[in-house]
Length: 123
Image 1 (cartoon, helix red, strand yellow):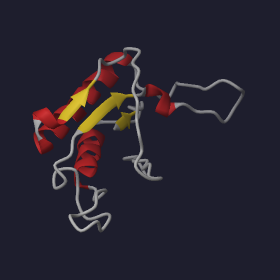
Image 2 (image 1 turned 180 degrees about the vertical axis):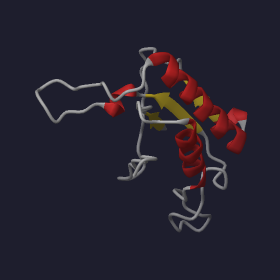
Image 3 (image 1 turned 30 degrees about the vertical axis):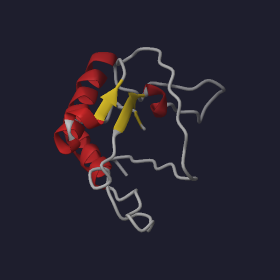
């Protein structure tokens, strides 16, 4: 599962960089159980991508999150759709699922191990 936040600083270059990193990171074990040997394509894996503007929240001041760093709706949607297209071009259309952009969604995730990775194309 990918939770994807598009910020006001993100560009089409960030989309390409991010999707390439997602599909090339060796996050999966090989046939003998050795971790960190296969990327999503090698592992014949699938992606559920969820647009998540709240990842761009700032919480430094006050007691309410500030979402001003999240890209505005139509611009975020264009970049997000480009991100999905790049993922699908890389691993296959049928291997990448997503929900409805901007909709309230309920998703469930079961982690297999204590691994969550933050990928920021700016850092």
